[in-house]
Length: 215
Image (cartoon, rainbow, N blue to C red; front, top):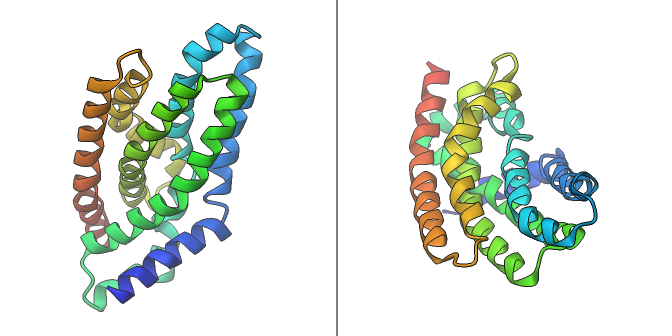
């Protein structure tokens, strides 16, 4: 357990030092800043559509660090060393997912508060958006690590990662946007169930991809 925590802390530190957190957050805020210029000063329109745009921005933000999640450790031999010491590929994937989630969740949720102010999102919808993102972020981190394991070392990994990640994340996007309706109850339940399922399956998919990359 101690070694697991140490590895998770290492993932968080690498994410902060390497820019894997700040670039997605800056991109997220940039989308929120530019969106009102497209729609104009119509506050009602911004309030109605802004939450959906923030969901799309959150999804796209998870694509930015895909290349750095697995490839550096594969090239440096860290993954092989962990495997030799008895760490299963699935457990290595869990370390990566938890580290990415912990490092990414808090800055993105804080940025959401700023972004909602930029687009004039009502306070009630902001609370729902924060709850929905809190459910979705573990699943998005799991998908990001899985896609990173699948595309590590391939040319154009970022573009390929986008092609793979976006279709897989569409249910999260649909249910997440649905939570911003006047009655978010059913959509929130579906979002939570989908996010739990994806987060639970991601270590096995990422572990299989790591194993395939080693062989």
